[in-house]
Image 1 (cartoon, rainbow, N blue to C red):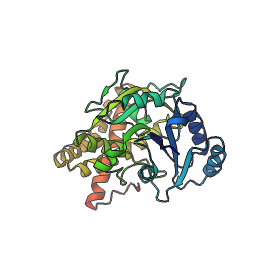
Image 2 (image 1 turned 180 degrees about the vertical axis):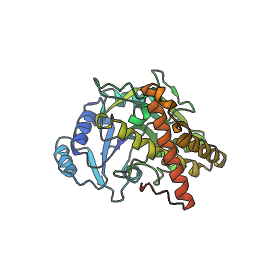
Image 3 (image 1 turned 60 degrees about the vertical axis):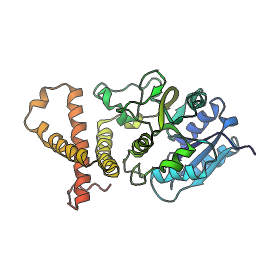
Image 4 (image 1 turned 45 degrees about the horizontal axis):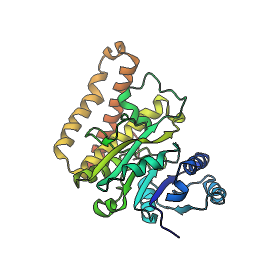
Length: 312
């Protein structure tokens, strides 16, 4: 059996029907059956994920099914990396649908042998509208990433999207795999594992491209509510602190801790925020929740009990 050029890793947890739709759309993309192996990593699902895989394997026999017993997205993705045989390892989420030209765009970006990693667009499904109260700079809280229509390197303020990215195998051998203290862990919305990996690639002079034609559509319906977004913002604050600890950015930690104290308390003293637009008020709420997460993680490291009852 010929080795496939690309290994597509899909980590999944209790999203059986979304996983089914994801896999069907993936195999409709041009070239996937010929050029890619598809690895599904079941991360301790308790729904009917196994049944869905058993059904789809009869239609798509190239699916490779493995299990990862340790909870956590990073653990599951690392299991996929260890299982993969392709020269390029791609990652998509289990709740996306794939554009038919996705693999063509991925391979085109990797035509340059110096490219270490590639990320693509993550768009909402057609017909799904983003609410007016969510600031455009906060689209990442819905895992929506659209940096324009030009093939180019990422800027310092941009980053690989974990739900639509691909990395050459030798990169993992050089800089390591996903850090397991980051990434979603069942119902805990930690993140940042792809951000931390991206920084390691850049630190090792790796070339990372944004490929706008490499598109997936993220099913975000359940996330379009303030409560979910603010909860995610909190956990991203905790994740951000962990990333900076891992990177050894002591001065940045100090600056962000001071800034987090400001956003945690000062903007909400008095009633001035009531005169702001709905979007601006929500932006302040996001900053406050991220600040709370950042400070809670700092307190956790220092051994200070914060009393909010959030176990990360």
